[in-house]
Length: 516
Image 1: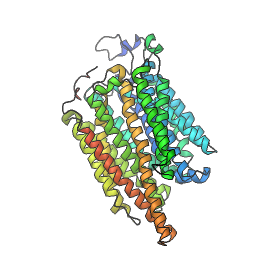
Image 2: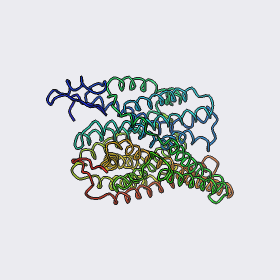
Image 3: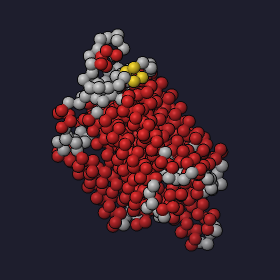
């Protein structure tokens, strides 16, 4: 990747070859800035880092949030899910508005909403205020995240430059989840849980200034500007996903066969089915044109990403609870315990981005999830008195290394062969898959863990077993290890989905993008 000036995003030049773009820039159809490649990449990566960071940064802070605002055990998870679900539900709309209105404009709008919502969340004095702020953060993230990948796919040429750019983007995207736990522990332990939200404000302001100076304004036609956006579709799919997660969570107290649980899950199925019908037959400009799934590579890549999201989100969530609730780590020590995972995910993303051009995406999309599955299965042997270095260090590194190896190839597989006009849609889909997998997977795994814990506590109490604290620690540990077991199964499923990706992809990493 060179460091010379490049025209970013959608601008059109009329300069002559050999002028380095300087004369052409003076005659663009819209005013724009020329920026070094590394600066354009840095702006996009910072935006993506903030988005992914806020999925996991709250995990270490949850006990402090519960104490300050009085959340119940069931209500506390909505601090995470309010963000994740609005993020997932509106990502497809975010990808479409980036296509219609230009990635720079949408990048700045999403970042602005995200920054304001972070400030509101930091000053929250009630549960509803915090959960609402987290939902607004998720909406801002849904607009921002697809724009970051669209900027890369419309700036960097297909082949080595784009592969390297996506490798950096994927490393930042993947590391954001692991860094979230580290930074959350540092901020919560040394300052307050509120700083996990306040930290976004100065970073967001600086990034918005840089985006205004260095990203191209774009040049969208009047017809595209007038194109209708499928807001009803976004609302329906968000409602369906939220209802699905609520139904899964409800099963913890009422059981899977309870009328309330079955009714909620049935409502979720109806809403999601309505979304599919709406996209196929009602929407004038569908949020998710079903034709895009004719690409076997894109469809399989999204299934892989869903599995990775479920397993990785579960790992960070349950490891944080295990370290603090069972091993009695402080928030600061818990944050540092996640640092090796951060390094592993970055290393994995860099290795795969450099080698994917030689051996293709398929080996990484099979091998990466299998490596994660091995680490998750190993984690299931953690005990009540487990030692970090002997029981947790190696398997947790394997989990994130496997994810890192898959992130760049899955982004390439999902966006290759897609028309440039639908780059935002494809990027929105792959990020949506990750968030949907994370939200639904976390709810399901949390249900498994809570069910096992409650059953063991009830059994131990009835039989006059271990003292209270020892019984609770044992029951919590067994619940978490059961969750790790099922997360390993999900990772194996992700590897199996990768088998559907053709050995010879429709568009190679080094070749031109095929459109349809």
